[in-house]
Amino acid sequence: MQPIKLTNFAAKPEQPRPQPLPPAVTIRYFAAGIFALAVWFGVYKQLSSFADFIAFDLCNLSPDSRLGKATQFFLYDTPKVLMLLVLVVFAVGILRSFFTPERTRKILAGKRESVGNVLAALLGIVTPFCSCSAVPLFIGFVTAGIPLGVTFSFLIAAPMVNEVALILLYGLLGWKVALLYLTTGLAIAIVAGWTIGRLHMEKYVEEWVKNVLDGGCETAIPRNLHERVLYGWQAVKDIVGRVWPLVILGIGVGASIHGYVPEGFMASIMGKSTWWSVPLAVIIGIPMYANAAGIVPVLQALLAKGAALGTALAFMMSVIALSLPEMVILRKVLKPRLIATFIGVVGSGILLVGFLFNLII
Image (cartoon, rainbow, N blue to C red; front, side, top):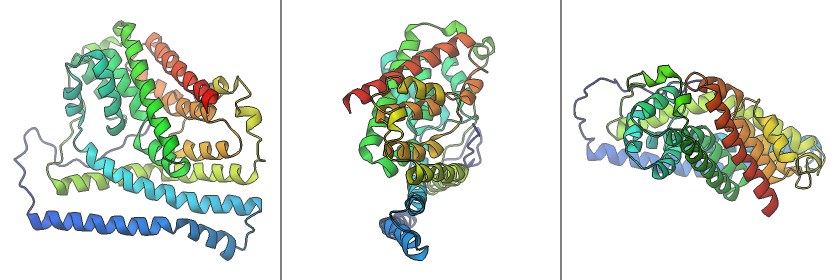
């Protein structure tokens, strides 16, 4: 996983007390924000008409042809997803400016394990998870006396239930699927972390981790509205700038499936009637390396061609939460037995989600 580096606002051990922004400046920020939102919504509402015009009028493709369907799918979904990413990543970036790694540790420290599991999973949604923060946060959690299971709830939720996944699911599949994914993803993070905590596997953390002083990444805290806006915009440049090729690639694959895979074909492989489809989807997903930006558009196309929702969600969760590169990163701080337990517990939760939703939906 590549690191996401957000702007460092002159991080120093001691920072002077920030001066509040003049009221006129604050009003200008809010006015500019309202105007930008109005422009965003105006453009967003016209995306479907724009895609139809380019595909069917300008390019003279038939709406019933495979190429026409694939082209319209690509031209509509690409700007839609990128616009949603920019809007929500900016808002979440501002929210993240309140949750530095040190503040996250303080929130979780001293909490009862069950309460800590819930808080850790919720914080995982809005806290950056990258090579700069993941390992130092893990070390900081352990040395601060936070239970191991609580730490795992955070580490499971952070990559799996993040704003990119929710934005894409909402934009491509609607709010019901996005809410379903949020609920089940948090449930897996909370229950899996609690289960690992019950197993008392602290001895399978690498010895060097136990000997590291509580430190982590030095992160400066934005101190006023101006700095928080800069922080949010830097998050857009860092995150969207990193994932936009994956978005285009994923939508391209999804467009190809949408236009050229026969209706109902995926039902024979990933449908409800094939009991082995869920474990097969998880087994295929674990070795893959992709994030939500690349996998959600493929998920949308698979569902349109007959794949069952539970099987498709299990595939997506396994790719994001149990990918092989993530296991390599975790091996730096965890012994193989604990990693195997982590894979087994989280994988079991994903399988349960897949079978459950195939059964009831």
